[in-house]
Length: 620
Image 1 (cartoon, rainbow, N blue to C red):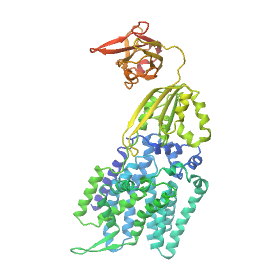
Image 2: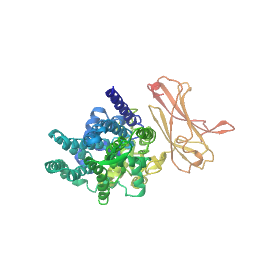
Image 3: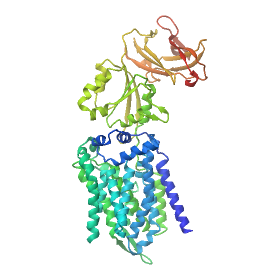
Image 4: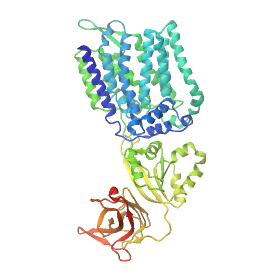
């Protein structure tokens, strides 16, 4: 019965951990680092790609293999992070058992509670829950650091060759996943110097040297080229705000309780009949202490020379914190222990301390692709990187392919970073081949605007998506549409001064794109009606709105300003294949009634053109 109860507890903890990691896994868009991971993982020459970067290759190579099997969707790529996070829950159970086994005497009573509590604390860890929902390498980092620590302790206790080889392999893999994990290896080396003796100490140091030698081919081939790359500068300086951020993300808003339990976890509490009579420090506690101190100290020192301090890069702490919390809780007697567990459980389940609101790049990409047509050029220039937009615009999404066939996508950010010597000549040559350009821009570089203006492009739309929140504050993400318009006479002018410069039709979904300008200042807000009429002049589809999806009311137009206005034709009925006419009307409301504006020639409406719609019922 006791065994059944333990398995039931383990199952419940695993379900809790899965819920925290999976329920909202595809809720937010990819951000720049996730798009960046996909870009490098699928770059034809991985070595060349990573030489421009600041990371080792293992995660990116593994992600490429995974995506070939699981697919390229957001969910599939993020599952590759969720799975090792779940494996870490099982592994920390074994690590906790190993730590308890190395604590002598009364500590053995912790065998029953500490492993389960370590699982629970890691299941509740916000750092793991959040990073498990990102297509990044941090959960693999945590898993492999935990592997390395487990096999290191197992080898120390049992001196078996299999455990020693497993430890060396796990150490090599963790450093090939992220360079910062080398600090965990440094902690192990210091532990060997402090606590081990004789042959065992020499073998431990030899194992670490072997692991370092296994990394040397990569460092000699690529690593030296990575020093000083721009990615290394995505760091923060130590400040009270950063300390506070680290405190909350890893120790929660209950940091006083968490730190007290962490401190208690270094010891074994030995109780007498009526009162506590001593605390016992164990040799293995040195490893746990070094696991926490060494990464922080070395990160702060290294950050003075090669900036890379970011709170998320300290996530190799996460299993150490969970383990020490478990050991601290197991030192507390019931019923106080149960009360503390309940408080941590309720807080962890309902409070989020490690989170970031990501810009909705998926929405921005979809907004752009919604109106781009074959023959258009789509450009991105985002200061922090536009890999995520390339991910969305260059591939099939569950909703279908974003960019239509015949539309071209280019990243100005990538071109400027990696091909800077040819950028200034490449960009104008590229722009000169297109008449319509979409530009997603959030950058200090104005070169795209300058060249568009010099080559005769006029801005006809500015779709704004507001992102409120996130580490960078409020971000207005702009999607601009630029066009070059021939000197041909306008299609039609209405009596109010609205001039229709151009009109095109896109199918599936059926949409009419109009380009307006004004010959005079307009004092009213006029509505544009686009209608689809059949051979009998019966209306089968219609779209009415102020220009540019109600974003550019005519009362705010400037003379000669160009306005792009898309109209998706909606129908309440299915219609058959055949000839249809597209008719444009302009009107305003007076006393609640529509008043139509005639054209300069006196017509009540303008016929943009006729077309044969095949399978029209499917596009309606």
